[in-house]
Image (cartoon, rainbow, N blue to C red; front, top):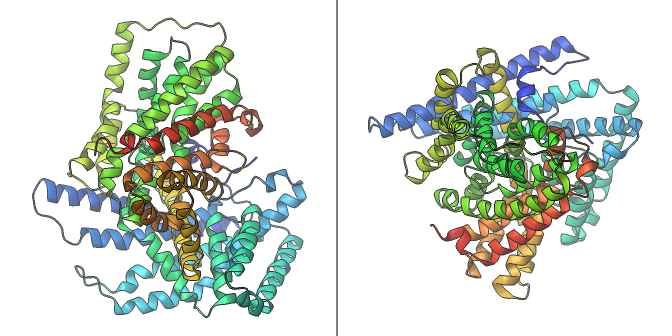
Length: 626
């Protein structure tokens, strides 16, 4: 089983991806993209941190800082998405293609690359026209033309198109010709069938957004590009709407200033790992709990609570924890399937720990207070951690060997605490800075980055080296571009569904279930488990959040409480096999076969579901401290 998500950040910082064909051209293309992308990440950190200092220390806010950050942000997102195309790391579902023969897998890989290239060919001219149209817009503080910002869209699309064509050139000519003929046949079918699709009304949505989209995702076409292709196919076949609108919706979806927190928290998470801060936090927990029954399982749960949310990537969170804990847990007799099941369940458990990227996304599309979400997210995760701890204790009696680890001495615990204390302060520093209003959710990550740099250079010396700086900045841009482009693609598809009336019909159907608020909460839990498994969390929120939150409000459900319920439900879906992408990420990180955990994980996911139902029907857990 393969997964198109970064599996081990530390390894990616050290190892360059080889270019088997067209090496010279690709090297230059990467240089053209990676250097400005890295500089954009660095510039965002500096701009926002200087803005905090100017406002909080000197009481002289810089009025143009947010504007400049917003302009750079779109460039960062598009360059990052281009890098992800070059590296082939856009999120995709490989569950079905992995079971194919090697010959069929090669053909599916060609189709995936062709799908990316096809959308970029369709959108390149509209993106240029969109950037040109923005020349009539002038930024209020800097007085710059809107084209300076919007030019990121055609430039990013052009670079990504060149990269996708280079990737296509590595496939066999027969596969490329076969895929090209297939794409032409599908396009011809949509063209000839356009009158029929228009006559079908909303049933055409089944053909496009279930049939065509479902086949594209199952074939391994990256999820974001599958969304975009389905949206373009629907608009071209059933409406007269120009594709310029798709570009505008992608821009709008990616450009929320709240989402600027994504690349900054991704960079922060990499610093936490590179400086060794995650390692010393885990070492302290192990000294306290390592000797008790299921002690290392408790350590994993506690470590995920501490680390989760800082990086903005569940993959990064698990990559920081698993390599430290798995060897010791294996020594104690725990099976690989049990290890990966607990790792995946702990990832789902901690979805609401701030500053989670999902929390930021839900705030950006629904208008819920980000400070309230940060405050509310901790207790639900603790409740689920306690539920998992009970299951882990039960399972430990069946899995662990008779090996007993002696209790660490008080001096050992004190020493571990002394070493880890500066690192343990980081999550509390970030959360208190937002809650106390010293920095916004977008800005606060820069405080964490500065704190990590100081600790890495002064306290935990040795892990932070100059040679990893550039790869780390590039990786932050790439992962951020992947996330942000999915948000933009989902925004465009959500707009198309809204215009058709389907999304409103679905929301009305969910709102009309019997049982009032209770029935609506239950159907929301089930729906977001499925959506999280198939679409991944952020696209599901962007698509359905703006529609379902008003209905929840009509039922008298607090918006923060509803946020916690749907986020945790999505977390269950994301980590649930056979479709949950993050389950396979856990397997890759733990170097465990996915089949090893397929049977064992369900007791953990079942306990999480019970805990989720408890959170859904006891609102105080979510809103008691607001």
